[in-house]
Image 1 (tube, one colour):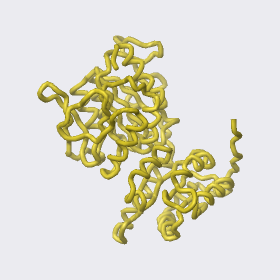
Image 2 (cartoon, rainbow, N blue to C red):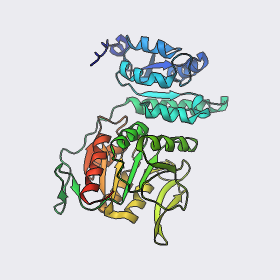
Image 3 (cartoon, one colour):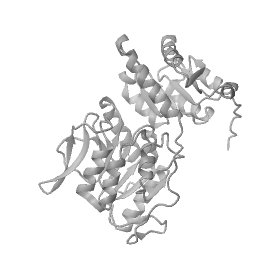
Image 4 (cartoon, one colour):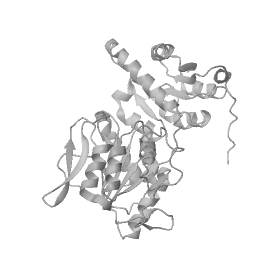
Length: 367
């Protein structure tokens, strides 16, 4: 096994409570824009600039950073190729993709997040959007670098009527539908989940991932590659079929309903309380109504509380609730909110959650 590099502690981190940021972009203008945004806050300090991926890796040998802001398209080693190395030398510091290339080529951005980048933001395309960019950038930087300190209950509540597998996880019914919600860091978590989910699991799978509408088609293609299943953006009114992964469109909530003896997709355009679109809550709520205890809801890494209300409704309907653990989450907001409700049947890394879905399906002869 290759030896890991030595990671010296940055003097800057010792001197200040500010979170340390490395900006990697071959554009001096782009670096200056980020610098100006950071200069207006006391929460962050840019401890290094790099005009190439190679320069960034060299700087990470002597810097301890809390966040890496990374351009995708650069001369030499591009941002995508650099991600595994940055994660290694940056001690898994979150990577925020900030690039105009994201708008021009959403496929590259989805690939970057599948490889481990935590989130993305588009550079402002006009002077009038600079203020919006600054606000969004600082919000994402803050959420990616502030650890969640709230803890889950030491013991999860268990129903007296529940039967248990050898693993001790409650199982009540067959699996007729699997619904998964995620946000920040979710593409990488979903890749890990689907890599472990056996391909003979053929029940319908619904996925809501917080992404702009322009990214959804590329996200679906990425899921098809990692899952070995047909994965497509959901269409309003289409039948929910076994063996397919339906991905929420970026401009509507993915919900399901029974119609003419079939389960069909029903787009919901109503604004949710948290403002997310697509939102996990409407999806899980509709799954609770249509599939009830024959369903499994999975909430993966993400900011905020989206999914908590829907998971609560699904749990009340008898569905099983699985959430990603804090250690493996980029942001333990969404899964943490569900866990603190005391309704999670399992809290674990994505690959363990996938194994639980498989165990339950096989226990009842579902494929």
